[in-house]
Image (cartoon, rainbow, N blue to C red; front, side, top):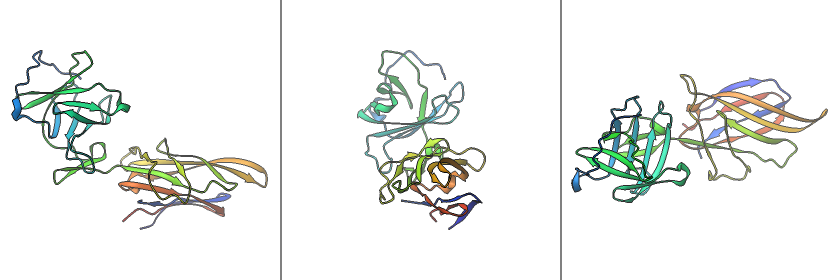
Length: 255
């Protein structure tokens, strides 16, 4: 399917295409009353937050990930909103990926509820949880047939920078996107496409480039509004070409 987004008259042509490639009150008793019948598995939801913060936790059941993987999604509204990844290093202990700079979390059961006990020498209360389901679309994940599926999109720019016209930077929604050689097809180096703004998920695509014209060297930046829905789950690439004539920005979403 082709969707022409804009046509602007400029000195050169730029065409882009897409293809897939709180706080709450905690008890002082740390006794694990759940016993061996309570296990860390499935999906848990935060509840009773004084400020209405929502958090989803998935223990295992994540498509493409080992069974000891843990994903925690702090939903928008929380000052620490985002996706946090870790793994169970024991049946009741989470070690978060190093980039999150978080201490290990002990999982504590109290009846049918769950909470965390951070292993950093503090008694910080991190909310209470009960078993539930994943919030649709939270952190770009959906639950299908009991499995958590990653629906996030990543992107990189495919362009041959060996000529006189060179791309100096590409940003989507303010996030820098890697530029790769035109012969490279793998999506090994990607940047997560940020959430869009507005009811349609608008994103500003900004491409800065430089070259040499009849009046000497020049640097230009072209911006174009796109919908986040134009980017499909998985890997997308923006193929950039230059020539003479009008500027055309077109999107070819995966059906």
